[in-house]
Image 1 (cartoon, rainbow, N blue to C red):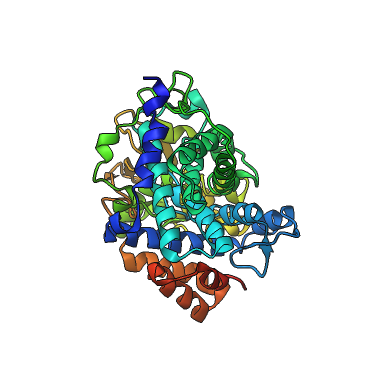
Image 2 (image 1 turned 90 degrees about the vertical axis):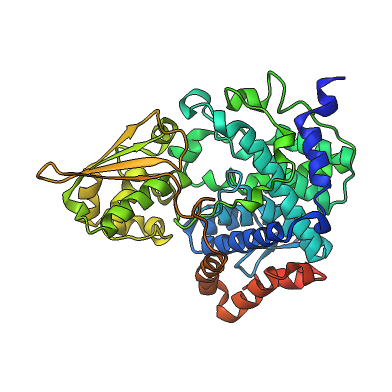
Length: 454
């Protein structure tokens, strides 16, 4: 038997094809509906950014304006729309962390394909479940043994998200199992390497393409290629030249570990508009401030996993709104100066924030220490020392939004309303949310998606 006869991609194609509406637990369906709502809310909020105007201008109108650009009066070609919507949904760093950032590419791909085909809500929901689950299974195969970014220089999110989006697209394009296998393989082959410098360094305005826009675009392209008869590298993940060997020291897919298990049953969602690597430190410092500590008079030592310190600890001021969302010292200084939650405004209005002397002074008092005993970005420990040498310690291993401290359904819904209402208005946002939460009752998603046009 050749390696490709039962490769990881072939197993994933089989698993995803079994994810039909009657076989998906209601609790998983519910979380998928919340993923759709949360992702769309993030994209609507993204229309408020300067980057939104740039990306819309870079995707000009065409004769084939088949799909809605969320939160705007515009339509674009299928793939132009998914690139814009994926970009808008990622730009503020508010989209969920299931499977890295699985929902952003999968939801935007599924909604666009559903819209142009007039698909029923159940089929769109199945596509989102398949995409998120496939993305997460690839991502989790490498994450426990992930190589440090200074060694491999790629972020393990882009490639799994492209493969997952292909699974979602394959379902909405009615591909068979063999075609689905090749859609996944082609997507992995076409995926960009998701360079760490763009995510964590001076990434400029292009960064949000890597988590949302590119995966949706690549997944749809790959599914169309597979439907036309093109084939892909079935051993792309497993071979000694493959993704698992590149991204991790002991990567591998265990199909039996996923029997009866659903990634969507343990959602990771964002409360803070910043990189997920910052959430545990932000929450830890918030807990100390809530205990009455006068943080602005303290020296702070933060311990995090070495791979986290490598990429989000920065000894300079944020140089752009995007950089601010990945700047550990900046976000901690905001919390020390009174912020309970990192909001979109903290990066959108970066220039104004950097005029606050208390924020600048606080950044100087924060020291970040890589701690090999910490192995996950959910883990951190903060030590605060006052002028008298008294030390207070706060550790966090489960920030808000993690599976151990999940956001309640009502909090996710409220997050959507807070992001969507300034763009759509209360009534229209309410109608969209009500139908999203009862998506299986929608016979044709086109009228529902039309609620997102302003």
